Image (cartoon, rainbow, N blue to C red):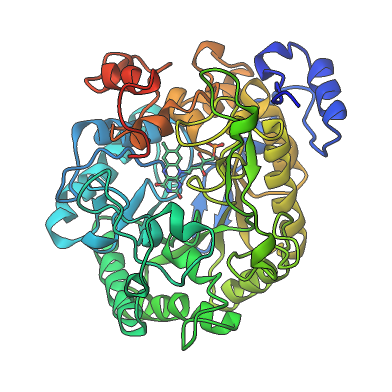
Length: 493
Ligand SMILES: Cc1cc2nc3c(=O)[nH]c(=O)nc-3n(C[C@H](O)[C@H](O)[C@H](O)COP(=O)(O)O)c2cc1C
């Protein structure tokens, strides 16, 4: 069987062609016939969040750049990225980027650390975003900004970009080998998890000091708190029943409420998952990665190692516990929820649908539009059950020219409250501002999912949109990225 050749979105020149493509794929994906502007645009409508107003219906997802200082401080490319987040016109800035709550919890040696030493710098980042937004849009009273708090767990690389120092919630039959987990001593002890509560609370306090409106207690993409949700096999107070698997979240929330009561709390959640994927070497074309195939999980059934999957067939998702988790968030008074899926490290096609794979990935095992529709439909299904939550949707960048029309449809019909944009913001920050004000896009800046923003950090380089953003075309890491893509440096940094 030859690998799949997905149709490029840019080749679908009309609504009819896009609609026909959707029908051929047999997926459920809807879009408005045109881009609406001004007051006719559902995306441009503000809404109330507690005693604040959020001025429109699009958000910037957290997007890190692997470009902080080695002490977790800010740098010039980072400052520029945050200014561009402000320039986007989005009135909800979800997270900015992942910020570690303690130095060993970093995913790379250049991740921000939310501690006292970095407080003034991170406050400046936020301020730069606010100022840019004010200059471009004339007001910021309806702009809400959160910081994303994280411990990278299985994916910790705090000291060297190429050396994993994983700390895990439990031993995993498929992921341990991939991420160099070889001993039970790498499992975080109950005491260590308990102490982590204080780190989250201390980081939240610093976030408030920096001017953040909320903190996101990150539960996605395979990082520690997401992995804890899957800790069925872990004994003790943090494993087994969902009540135990959410203990750390509940303790963190109680700690933040006691220490910084005016700070709002949100959660970014991988709402579903699937098993790890790998490239199929038997179907690789010359010079290319093979198409993605699931790792053999037949020896691991029932599958007790993921959150939001069917334990009898983990290639299928199951939202029963996701619903329970959202109920818990409601009970905890957490209204802001950003839904994503899977992990960029072990099933990237689920998490960030792309036509061109990152260097540690595989060729798409499905048309990327199938992955987009999967995320959109899961959010829509959950929104119907949780009308009181503010749900942010993910996975829209692959829609390219059709992003505004699809986003408009799902917001207009109340299937999602806010559409979040990740990669598309790196190449074209004002994409939805242009769409909702002028009814058209500058197509030359539209993200084509080349995945250089992921391939660069996988090869020890800083992230950015190298193909479309002039700043990165001439960036000092650009020649090394070119070399890495031609196979010249070690992969999997
Ligand atoms: C370069 C890059 C950096 C990212 N950084 C983060 C991050 O810090 N925190 C996070 O939760 N997700 C992060 N993500 C995931 C995005 O927020 C988003 O979920 C993903 O790109 C899919 O959305 P999109 O289709 O709009 O790009 C990152 C993705 C990329 C490509």
